[in-house]
Length: 399
Image (tube, rainbow, N blue to C red; front, top):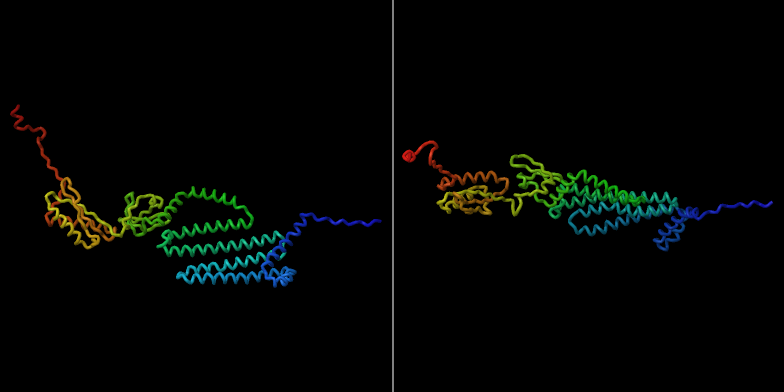
């Protein structure tokens, strides 16, 4: 009898590729790591290769040591540069970057260690993606801290960066966090092999829908942002709007601006409205001082020089009229029944305009009465030629 021949199944190229994939990856990872070692260490490394677990532990240990060394070099080198600065902001920035720098180097060696264990390709790739995900989240969370430190520094130097103020920090903080989250999400999608195009398209559609739904709110927010950046007025200024309101600015928010009128009534105006309105700011200019104009007329025939001297005396004797710029009197015009003068004086603050104007009018009136200057007023003389129904003597003679 002839012996039965046992036929062994031949392995297909696909099966051999699957079986060889983990081994080839491990070999490639080991060879790539061994290429960075000195030649004198290669014999010892070849002995370690025979024990994969020992090689993995050794790579993790080497990675930890190199991460500590890299962290120390990073801190020392930047500390030498920051010693020249007076601010402690750079020191805080170095402290914030210490941990991410260490973990970045350490996780790189952890990835190499995972490849040397000899796991299947699916488990190995998932572990590496988990490590990359953790590292991306760490950098994103540390980015929030760096953003807060950056905005806090700019707000303290608001004289140089007027656009960054304590009231605009929440807006910049929100925008910065949204950008960091968007960037982190994009990196995570790339790490896990997900095409971000569809997600970006969905985010764009959602953004358009939200923009249409909250267009008034967004308009007020952007107007408030540009008002704070452009600073046409600030808290404490006295402003006049083209709609007739006049008052002191008590609050400049991201959504609205509040005015306190002279009647102690607070008016809330949306920033979108006030941003497009004509604003007269009485508190700005070369100084905060404001000018008052007192218009007065004198009868024809009055000594014009006497009128000017009387008005100047009134201005100089008032205690709240500032001496610089000096008060002045101007002969403005020849009126219909008077010669018109104008007294111009400066006051320290616009809020004093109403009261000081009242006091100056009273003093001008008393001074004119004391010096005999007549303030003309419109007069009409009525002459009656004939009363209805009454005949004159001439008409009776004619009859």
